[in-house]
Amino acid sequence: MDYEKKVKIYWTVFLIFNLLILSGCKSEISTKPENDQPNQRVITDELGNKVNLPNEVTKAVSLAPNLTEIIFAIGAGDRLVGVTSFCNYPEEATKIQKIGDTLKPNIENIIALKPDVVFVSTASQLEAFTETLEKQSINVFVTNPNSLDDIYKSIEKISDVFGSKEKADVLIKDLRKRVEKVEAKTDSSEKIKTFVQIDKSLYTIGKESFITDLIDKGGGISVTKDVETAYPKISKEKALALNPDVIILSESPDNDKPNEVFANSNAVKKNKVFKINADILSRPGPRIVDALEQIAKALHPEKFE
Image (cartoon, rainbow, N blue to C red; front, top):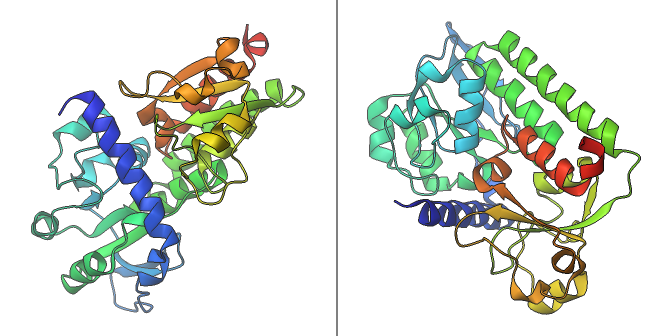
């Protein structure tokens, strides 16, 4: 599959996920009772569900690229036995068995791998999918990050599952230090009106997106920060009225320039249009700080000379 098609499918899946969240998928997750069996423990996931796990998790499946990246970053990548077709980082992830994409994983393949736990994002929690895995005694662990702080919490939670707290602590400390350096340079700067274009059809970021938090920490203010949901699609009329000073493109071959509605915006007139790799910008994992640093340099180049 070529890069353009892959990126487009990825963002489509990502957007569908958030629509599923709004339609009430959170309520479809079953809550497991406390487990008092020997050699097992109970960990609470990010939606408050009790997840029964063996004391040592040796086989796991990841159904989202950001989760795969987190698991590798805390030193537990060797325990992944299945990942999605979108899991392309780090390089080692590409060698792990693929079980379909995030929205439509191959349930039979997952069951055949006999994992101790399956990691998923909130929006992929379809009732039938969860019930099928639970009937096979396969546990589902849900993550739900909506901000940079939430991403740290996801890393901590996942490290609890694998017993990798020390490596997670080092990772989080490093990420926090990098973020603090960015904020120290941008805190006193004027907030730059910024529009994030997910694709040319005017999908963007809203109140519930972690990218909105990144724009703020990078010294900007998202012009769609008050729009409900995480990834809304806005009308051309609304986009025209925004008149951003900077436009950030989620970089992909079919999202290489702003929608034509921005032709007379301050951002286009002053050539303040920047691209950030879609994989880095869209995945709430360790590389999100790379995206923050790029955002901050785009918004306030004078602070990073």
